[in-house]
Length: 243
Image 1 (cartoon, rainbow, N blue to C red):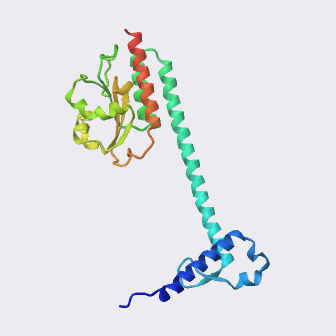
Image 2 (tube, helix red, strand yellow):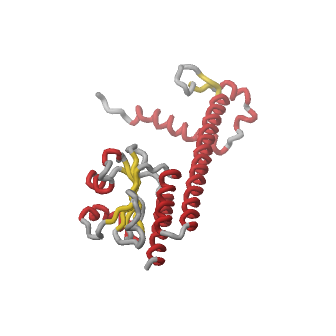
Image 3 (cartoon, helix red, strand yellow):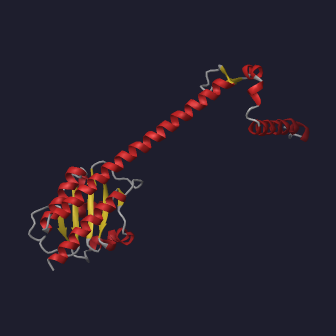
């Protein structure tokens, strides 16, 4: 095959230059067609639906504007929906804070946390894992509180979580799942892990969902951090009061 010569390449380069010039001209003179309605009416473009038909330039512009309008409406709806969801979460967190303030005993605070997680946040499976003794908790009859030694071997797998000091969402290791939820490990598809105290100095809150996508790594964890701060403050206050 004979390689293209400069003569065969010239028409393509010339067409590209002409296209660039026309684009630049129309960009600089958006009112060009205002006084050339007859020319505007003769311009035809392939239909964007690909059915082989053609439409006028004005019709194509209207289609583009309609599509942009739909995109803006969808973005606005998403923003509004997210705003409503955030408002609902803020209200639930506020309700938890009020409940914690209203009770004086550590038992009452734990019950308030359990009630909030189950009723407001629909957490069917959760556990508060504590690495230190909290006065008044030993006598509480609840499955949601577990005490483990700070040097427990299984806690090593959470070192990166504690070092970050931030909640983490997603699927967890089988060993972590079995350690956190030994009574029902098969019901854990995904989980939210929330350090309690500075770098997990108190322990952690673990919330499980059977849905593998319910807690995913891309979701915002701000509201989980708020819950962790409230629980940590409530436990710290109890330790001070009962010290």
